[in-house]
Image 1 (cartoon, rainbow, N blue to C red):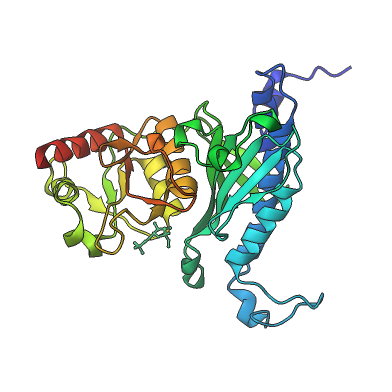
Image 2 (spheres, helix red, strand yellow; image 1 turned 45 degrees about the vertical axis):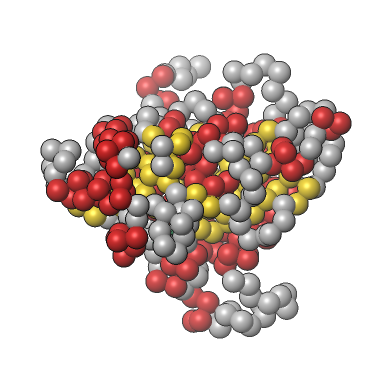
Length: 340
Ligand code: P6P
């Protein structure tokens, strides 16, 4: 009988499904409904990425605006992505409410006792960049609602502050497709291996560097930022933290945040003349991002307030955000204090 030596297992891959099942073992009473929900989410993003990867071919293949072999009209990618997520998450018994950046109103799907999760998502953030082949992403936030249907109030259950998230993350459709996820026990990155069609653990326990070398902001709006934000960006440029920062801005939030998470530095979308409340959406952009950044050791603020503490009034409300490593965020708070 051959001995199966441990050494042979060094290169064993861990898929996202295995990761979530291993996490689930820590909760003996877990029913598996959360892992089942996540499998619907990952399946949807695999379908989306297959379409995103072929976006440039729509004209070549004559699909744009035409009908495909089933006689279906070719859909815009963000509408396609939205429909795929609504469909596959809607099929999961444990999903009670879905809310999307693409839909004005949320969908209350089921009131069964199992339907205890709420998923709020932006199906394809940055989709305007697809035409020029820039990375785009799906962002998602998962909340719980009372197990007892009689204790539920759908509007209240939906509008929970970000610190109540049970999990959050994004899928970045970039040079590779990567799922970055946290369920409150650190941040982990899973890269889609097209050969096996699985998200494989590639970045275990991502930790943000305490200080980076890049700031990431749309400087076209700089003169309309509040004074503290202008002083903050000017200080980073001018060497206030011991070195002159360079600028990196892709204009696709998931890509800019992903670089900040892995390499450090700061990403910000301040209040501007065009968007005095900030441009990014709280529930399905800022909250998932802030959850990940904090889980990775960084900080995410809206002015002096922690993003995750903001009490939402509406599912599509906007917020300003500054998120980054501890050194940059300490400096930002100093700029706020000095501007008062
Ligand atoms: P601006 C993309 O449209 C988006 O919603 C985010 O992905 C991105 O960070 C932001 O808007 C870019 O906005 O005003 O810099 O073009």
